[in-house]
Image 1 (cartoon, helix red, strand yellow):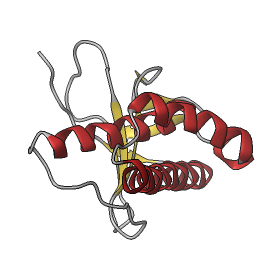
Image 2 (tube, helix red, strand yellow):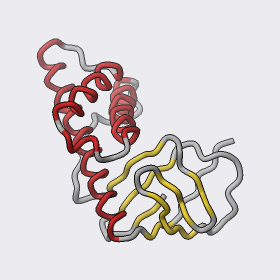
Image 3 (cartoon, one colour):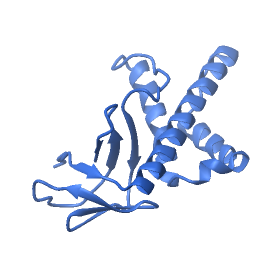
Image 4 (cartoon, helix red, strand yellow):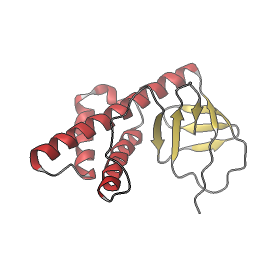
Length: 156
């Protein structure tokens, strides 16, 4: 059984800068892929598959050095989220995917290598982040989404 627990994070100044870069890169990749998918659909009548998006991501990382700064799986999960959004749209479970804005809630996903160590959350390329863990967590961490509200509070 899957359970969701929301905990508050208190990152340091350096960690906030790294998170801001990661949020920005993930948002940029999502918006770029959405624009490419829209172009492809207008030109051929078919969009880009998840496989095409991940191939495009690897070429983007070669062209843009700054895309190598965040953890690679956060960018891959942005591609996966976009392809899931299109699947949900075509199966009438959601609206057409929209471009992401930096003025609203920001989020990135870590699919693995996140651990809880005492009162800290250990995140790849970020290190130990102070966390307010208010209940006992049992089982394995599967996907951890780190988000920032518009008022500047961080959650996982």
